[in-house]
Length: 410
Image (cartoon, rainbow, N blue to C red; front, side, top):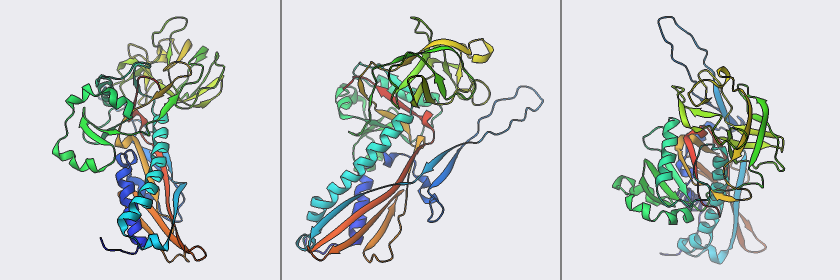
């Protein structure tokens, strides 16, 4: 290749291409809201989720008010990576520049964004399958995660993905004999980490899979507590340390009983599922747990019930003396591979402005990713300074369309 002077436009295009290829997680989730952000209109948009309704029996109408549910997507996090190189390096061919500067810079930037968004996605996910402390050596738990997405009505077509760490992947070598890689998936091989597709999901090997660390307490008590509709917090006893965000728990019988007290139910028919409703901690103290999802005791948004599907409030079990059981052992850390539908989460970027006095500044946008590249010179040291910036945001739109896997600890 002949020597070619670097241009800010070429750097912008290459940076965007590298970011797109290395985005194993953010490249597989919803990015349709990227175009909703316009200069001067703030950094927040409200994303509305479809209303839920119940079915009428008989001839007489039972008109229901549509309850609008929404979540906020805030694009307010600006991260960047900065480089400098001298005139001699500038005059070298593009391949050397890409390998020595641009590729490691973009790998660092994308890795940090992937790590942050995967952690936030995992901490928003309450559905969990697997056996804590037992190494995942078959595809059985992937199948259970797939079933959990089905139970919460995630679309069954394209758009399901799996982020899995390399250690868990190595334990699944025997199970991978069932994997297929149809020709229609060849394009996905250009995205970093893509392995194959099986069980209705594309699998990605990703070292940024979140490791959740349990505290030294994994049990607590609800003492004669009255659960009311819309609850997102419990008053508890028995904790010596506040649980960390992302820990998942169920509510079981008191004493030595391990029978679930609060069961999950089908989002539409309200029939009871065989598994306990799981909740994820979002905050709290030693005496108060703040969690998601909110408890809905009846109506169109009902998400909990007794084992026979009846409402908790109609069977006299709204007042509970029960145990809070967190998944996993005390002071243990577990990788949390994640299966999800693309519309469970959203990632968006906003185009940063071109500065008035910056003659070498470009903004490049492709497939829901927007990067700004800005160059300036240092006359004293004969160097070119380059900064690459991204303004981004992340939100969990439908966390019920994702499911964690838990196995052996680290």
